[in-house]
Image 1 (cartoon, rainbow, N blue to C red):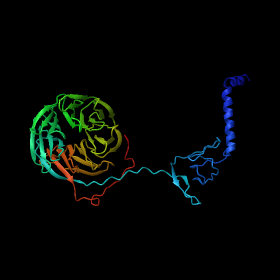
Image 2: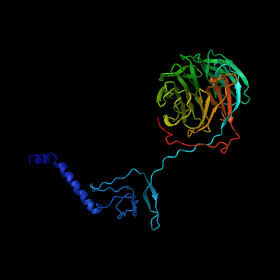
Image 3: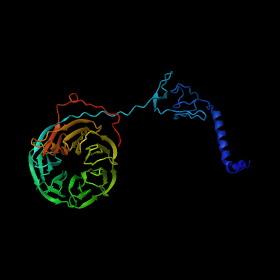
Image 4: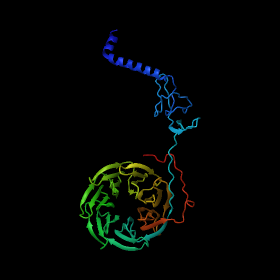
Length: 438
């Protein structure tokens, strides 16, 4: 007795409110007359539900999907079958729409676009060491290569003839780039030097000092006069092209930064490193805004898509595609089991990856379908172990592919004009677990 008095004294208001609420519910249920109605899935229109139950009455709101049962003794279990709205004509002929239980289809993987296969068109020899880098000039008339013989050579793109040799580096040349706005060629090498060549005089006019070890990669910003370089000192450096000032030193990687690319939109600088990470950088602040840690092994190459706002990074585990500006993961492209040294992409959606064992894989960018595999024979007199691709580059039209190889040659590939979808059909068998996200 004492307990109940104490309880009423302490919780009286709460108990009264609960009882009143229950009475109100019972009253409203009686007024609606729906307490004994069976549950049904409906879109609120009168007629037959998917289960064939007569709903009757017009109490359901137009947007309601499930009428809740207030009788707690009869819970209703709805399976995990997806609900898909389907229009079902009624007996009266009016197009009243009801909800039908239809299992949802698995997402279909799009069929890849057909690309013509590529074939070897020309082999150019002239370097006395491994050819390490390529750059095609913006006018598409010539291209430059750098090699282990410390020489930069300029070749005519149409004929493959040597136009010029530039000497000045004292170790392997690892990166070349041609400016679209100035008559300048930039080069970097294992001698820690970054040079700017004036192509009107064929002389070095500027040096950019600051790297503490070999410089492995170089990129020109498309809209502002800055130059990005990266190397074995685990940094990427941003240089003012004109004043030679080291504007930013991008620190954060813990191993060799093997690849750097620059674009006009954010992230303006992207780096890939042997510490198996990819970093996106804020160029104005000189700070890392995002680190992508999905790769398990060294990232040796990064390539920007020429028209889509995306980029790809290559590692021996697989090639991964990302969406800018946040670096959202898109998909894995698996199958190139070698150490992938380099990649190139053209506006037609062809992605090419070059391996350390001389294999070249051609992929459809959107679907990751491997439409061609290629291994060019090595130069006569070279050992088979000298098959290796160090750099890939499409010309400005995207119809010629130039490769820099370990057998000291430069190979030029073109598309097979005689091929068609009938002669080279797409053998497309998507696996169910194709897009594993790891």
